[in-house]
Image 1 (cartoon, rainbow, N blue to C red):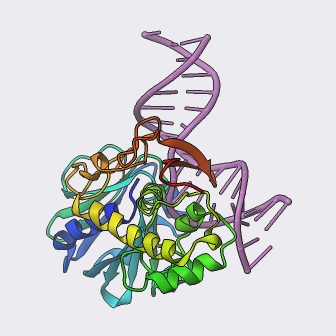
Image 2 (image 1 turned 30 degrees about the horizontal axis):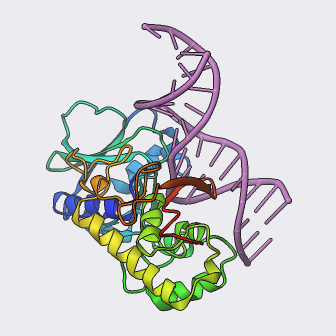
Length: 273
DNA sequence: ACTATGCCCTGGGTGC
DNA sequence: TGCACCCAGGGCATAG
């Protein structure tokens, strides 16, 4: 599932392939109906065609295409969305839902097995600002901000880390990895963390995300990069998906529990409550 | 206002 | 081998 490091990898790879290109057409395949709930596919075609991509950015798990005439295309891959660079004439890929074709006949194919992915066209980024806090690897995400947020949270640390208004881009895998790295029990009440623990947690979140970015993301489940290759970070995870296996720090057995409906992995010895 | 829960969806895994 | 069932979880709507 693409979280911040996976989306970051995709955006970095996508950049040289799309920047300053002009959109010639939008191909819409069957099974893409959910993508077009907010607006019709013809609306999207009208909005996109003849526009150029001036810039590309990311906030949390959202991919942001900055188009000419101040139009903005926002994509979210959710659980199983992926993209691949193809050409206009390539056959439809498996699970391909839409294809954005450029005037040089290259194209972005958007695939999605479970159809949870979303696209939207907006005129400014207000829609993201209202639902997202600072990006977890940005300067805005720091000890002061995290402290102010955790203090007033009436939930577990794990639930707080999954809250995109607190740590935009952190998902289930990196929330668990960060808690393990900071030696904090994910069940612990967020508001009960000591100053030192919050400092450690903030550092751990950034370190865990940056390490994964340098490994081109974690390929557990369906994540693939723009070229269809897996990341390398799945061999580096400390707890996620390792229930029953020994903790790499203290050799105790990793446990799996559920917190706010999400599978949560932790070491009961070095992440005491 | 807040937090928790169910839902969307499909492929892969498990157990009978 | 077949088939029913369960699980994975991001973000949203809804319930409490």
